[in-house]
Length: 288
Image 1 (tube, rainbow, N blue to C red):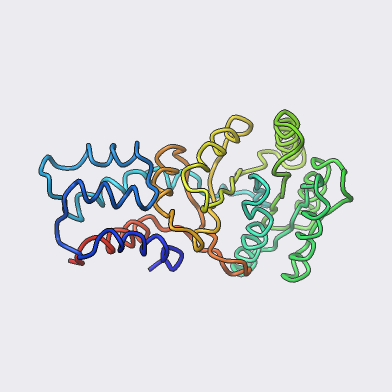
Image 2 (cartoon, one colour):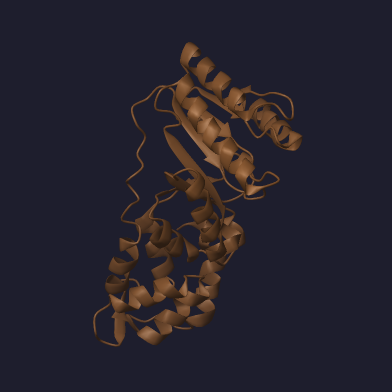
C-alpha cells in the first residue's frame, strides 16, 4: 500500500461505511468527488462504465487505469549525461524534490551534479548547497542575480568533461512577471542544448499535491512556456486529495514519475499506476 494515501483513504472510508462487491454509481460518484477527482473526470468515468447501475471493482479499475495510459511515454533517453530541467512554482517543494531525485540516482549508482539555476532567490541556492553537502553530491552555483542559463551551461559542461551520469537543473518558480519567467526558462533550454545537444532531455514539472485539482491550471500555464515531459507530485502524504492524480493524468496526459511523501532525502516513491488504483479501490470494494 502507498502510505501517502492514508488521508485520502480515510476520506473514502467516511463515505463507504461498508465495503461491498458492487456499489451503486451514485455512491461511486460521491466517493470519487470526496477524494478530489474532478467532476469532469468523474462524469467521464461513469460514462464508460457498463449500463447497469451497480459497479464492480474490475469495471471501474479498467476505466481509471486508462487515464494513466501515457505513463510510459517519457522514458530516459540514452544520453550521458542525462540532463533534467526541474521547474514549478515556489513552495511546491521543487528544491527538496531535486535533492530527493539526486539521492535516488546516487543510490542507483549514478554520478550526479546539481545546477543551482534559481539565482532569483539566494535562499534557493543556499538550500540546494545544504542538500549537496548533506548528500555529498556535486553542485555548480553562483551568486544571487547571476545568469541562470550560465549556471546550467557550466554544470552540463562539467558533467560532460567529468563523465557525470545525471544533471539536475533547479529553476526559479516565480519572477516578478510571467514574461520574465517565460523568457528565463526558454533561455535555459536553449543554452542547455548548446552545452550538450539534445538537453535538457527531460523537463519535469513539480506540482504540490495539497492543491489538488487547482494545480492543473499551473501545469497548463507552464506547458505554454516549455513543453512538460513528466510530472512529480509532492506533499501527498499531507492531503486527502489523492484522487486529483486521476484528473492531472487525464487532463495533462503526462507521465507521473514520482510522488514526494515527506521531508527526508528518501521520501520519494516511484509512481505505480496499478498499485495506486488498487489502493484507492480496495478502500471501496471487498477484495476478490
